[in-house]
Structure formats: C-alpha cells, structure tokens
Image (cartoon, rainbow, N blue to C red; front, top):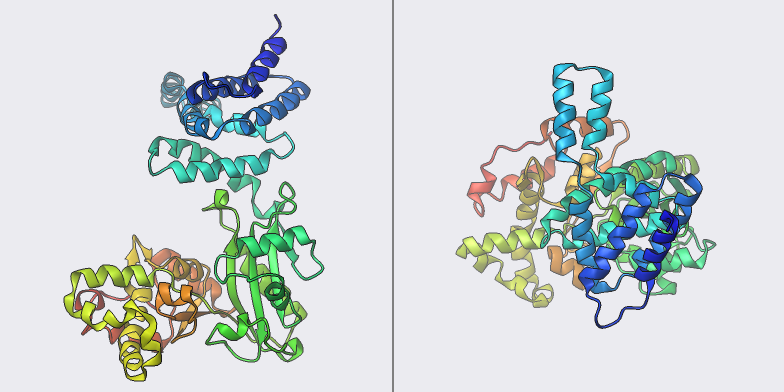
Length: 446
C-alpha cells in the first residue's frame, strides 16, 4: 500500500458519517492523523491536494470532537524538547549563524508549519481565523491551548500585516453581502435594518473598512464617520435614521462614532491605529476644510468599575443608588446630583484607574495608545439602553491633533503619560472626597 493510498483511506474514514459507536475522541484522533499526513507530505502539488482534503476533514468534525481535536493539536504538535536542548548546547558552545538557525528551527512548533501548509487550500485562511476564535473561547477552561493561540497569532501578524490590507470606502453601492456584514457585526451602536444603514452611508457620512485578499467579502474592521460643523456631544443625532442630511462641504469636524473589529479570531492583531491614520489622510484629501478629527466614544468599563467600588464603599453605594433604574432621568434634582458625582468619577476612572501600566478602560487604551488626546466628557450623550447600562449615558471625545499624535503616542507608550484637557484633569481631582485612595494616586497626564 502506498502512502497516498493510506492517506486517502484515512481521509475517507474521517469524512464518513458519524455513527453512534464512534466517540468524539476517536474522531479527533483520526483527524489529527490526517493533519500529520499533511505535515509529512513533501510534494508541492500533492501537498496542496492533501491540504484541501484536510480542510474537508476538519469541517466534517462533529461539535463534540472539536475540543479533543484542539487539545491534541496542542500536545501532539509540540516542539521536540530533546532537539531544542541539543541545538541550544551547540549554540552555547559555538554561537555561529548555523547553530543559531538550527536552534530557531528547533523551537518553532510543527503546528506553525502545519498551519502554513493548510493555508494553501482555498478558504483555509477563513477556517484558521475561525479556529483561533474557537481556541480563544476555550482558553479559560483549557489553558493548554495557549500554545495553539500563540502560533496562530504569530502567523496572523504576518499574514494580516498592512501590506496585505486594502482600505475601501463602504457606501450604498457596495455589494449587499458586505453591507449585510456591517449590520451583523456593528458592535458599538446597533444598526436597525436597511433604512438605518442607508442613513449611515449618506453624503454627510463616511464608512471605511480594511479588507484582506483571502477574505474578500469579510471586513476585518470598519469605522463610521459623521461630517459635522462642530464636535458632537451626543450620539442620538448621528444615529437618527430620519435626521436631515448635512452638507459635507461645510463640515469642519470628522467625528469617528463607531469602530468595530469584526473577526474574533483576529483579536490582538492591531488594525485600528492603521485604519484611523489612513482614514484621516483620506478625509483630509477629500475635505480640506476639516479642522478637527475626534471620536464620540463609549466608556464600556465604567459600570463594572463603579460596581466594584460600591461593593467596598457603603457611602458611595448610597450616593449612586438611583442608577439602579432609569427613573432618575425624569427627575431633574436627582439627575443633577448624579451628574455632580459621576462626572468626576468618570474622569478619575479614565485618568487613574489602571490595568498594569495602561488605562483600565479598553477604549481609552486604544485611542490614547494611538496618540489621541482625552478632551471632553459628555453628560447623557447616549441614553440608549446599552449606553445607560455601560456608563450611565456618559461618552467621551478623544481628539486626534495631527501635529501632536506622534508626541502623545511616544509619551504614552514610554512613560504612561496621558494627554488630557485641563478640564478633565480638574474633574479627576474633584473625585477626591468620593474616592480618596484612588484620587490621591499621582496622575500620569500631560
């Protein structure tokens, strides 16, 4: 029996319908053997054909077999510890380029080469992105899958680098298959059907996305922009599908009001900073009158942060008790009292609440890391159900001043310095009576 005949028989067995007597573990083990076959194949043409067959075998895996398959992928395709030790010893004895190359080759897991070979099959890139999505979802209960995640992330950083991405304007003439994805993926402000989408793509709006040749109809990330005459303080007028269209030729501000990462399997692969910079360049060319590039951004971590604080501080819990329901919106005195407390607390949260060396809030980390300036808090800027739940309606403007972006980015990355408006720094200091422990921390702001 030839190797190809053996592999074909194995593939037929894996692709066969599942019967009650065959366990998920067995299906996972058989599929792993097919993966080994691809890794051992040397011919380019036969390897491409086998890659297609391996892809079909993986797609045929029943749901119950996915987890054991991933676990075997983590264990069975690990680097050879003995080979690493041998190559490391050679390199320590003689640090030659040859020994360095051998050491580098020994520490790379066979998984990476398997993924590279599989990726020659049509549609494989999308499958591998989805595979990482599955891995990320399993990581909490199966930490051993971290090695699979690391290998895929390493490859994706190369496969999805800026040289392969294309920026496209998305408008009403864009194919429907892509427009449907915008409705499905929008994560910041839900798109309520085609009428809503059409308004967001009108003449006083712009939408741009990054696309990759291997995923032609799948936006990786997209950004929605409103062209306005002043910096927006509330999001409702930007989202109103019945709002009158403005004249884009008179706009002086570009408001980035929604940025959505579409592919969970590409989490951690940075596109947003590249997207914003290129969109600013595109808009500047199209509309030379534009003076200000700003966001109207949510504060998604504020609610969880406040909840944690109120567990530890009874007085603060009492002060914020009206937030338990939204009746306070119709009670001017209560709303004013909450505003006096929440505005300083939110400023303190954005400027001083930390996760490791960066801001606790993920949106703040993103924009400040890109060189934006924390400019203004907006009270009751988003009174939708989601906006009230995540930040009691608060939103923030981050401003991208093109002559300051590089300096702000460097200060933030190297020293943790946050570029912020004077008014926000003052607000953060006002939270001292409410949160003396946090408010007394030395600020790291410019």
